[in-house]
Image 1 (cartoon, helix red, strand yellow):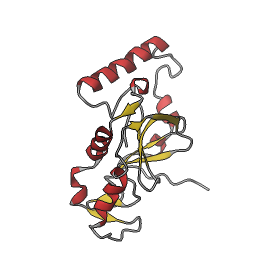
Image 2 (spheres, helix red, strand yellow):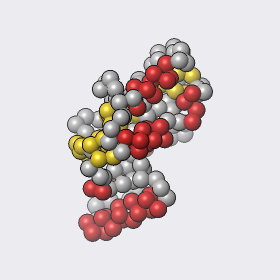
Image 3 (cartoon, one colour):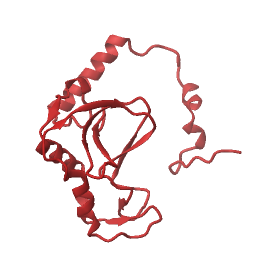
Length: 182
């Protein structure tokens, strides 16, 4: 059975396979950077993120403190919420509209238990996981249901993270990965 792969308009399905791109490289087995060059490159990215005040997008987990003041965690969670969250439709995965009043409950679930400094714990992702803004499977979108503003990215197996908070209902973790927070 052939697997169907959805691609953006104008993108050939074969471009979704690595061998397509490797055939176009002059020397696909060449070493591009040595270990110390990679570490220097990564450090430069983190330094630029720090200077720009964007550590949620690139940080070293080794620099995480042992605890974070609860107001800072609450502010971090609120900062991830898209400005349009309270204006856009909330939908189920089937496309049915959800009452607008549920938005405050969702935000409260994410932030209500934060009443003390949060001890930072560390872990590794054990299965591919969605990194979402808030503890809900509901979709926040304009006209295209597959353009969910609450879905930040996906996190691969083995990705390290710092656990910053847990939702009141214990269904959602607010984490910092080396490249994203949610």
